[in-house]
Image (cartoon, rainbow, N blue to C red; front, side, top):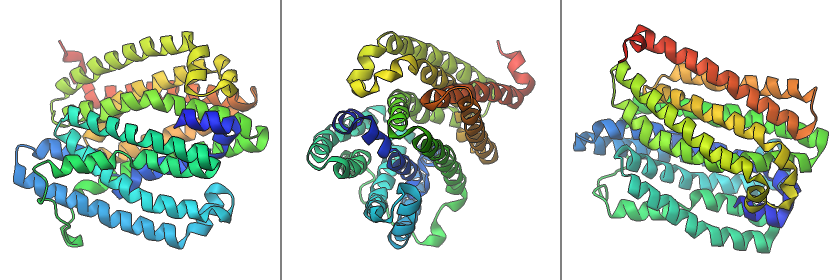
Length: 398
């Protein structure tokens, strides 16, 4: 998708789609109440108790459905004002309505993926993602090539919803078929899922909203080209960070969720922190050394300016994903207050760092330097916080 937009619409076109990409990112996370991590946690815990697990999945499906209907109603009734705020013009109201309908597809996909990963069915998860991607690419290509910017808008929704089709096929072939029911509001597992909703809402709103503010600043001060360069860097890093995030969310988190011994948790965190750091260093080195080739391959020649700046993005991503290894302990243990504070902390630090760096460096360079500084600080804070969480037990590790 990123390559198609970069080739057909260039850096300016990608820059003009930036706000919509942030909106879709937000909705893809909070669709259905943002309960994916909660579903993973409790399916992993209840899998040895099938009746309890089935009742929970029915509750999660109902929770997600009611939330999605409420969100759709908001999009329908407030499409004009939302389009004005997000896209800058009321004429884009149809986009808000489109994503309002699409977000129910996001919700069902998130639910299916959560159940699959709670059961640790890694192969099934991979099939859903791969098949969904292969189904979406030709459709997105046709939409962008024929309809340009408007086609790209529709294609963005198609890309996110595409895993739903293979996901539904997996559902109908599983033991869950006929077992998942829509429950009444009073039967919803609100106490179990609400903390995860709050955590995902925070993730979905805090940092993406700050990105919107920074993008508007870039557009106003430097133009769509600079905003497009930064959007290209963001989407490129999202591509490889997505791999790490899926690994942490769908493999590492259930493992931590099952543990209650802090010494065991510490061993797992340090082991996987070292693994993630080493893997990122290897991959990041290859990307940096071959940046002239990879930037044109993944984006287009319009993004050549990123060759001198990508090192800042890579450094920031290294510390970001390293911090997230520690952060997933808070998710696994449903430490809602800590997670919310951490999300707002990184967002505020990023905004402050960007504007501070922009006094010295113009355009996208200042933004990327601010990003790098933010996650160096955030990683240090996470390490200190984890050390406090472990207390003295970490010193007794063998």
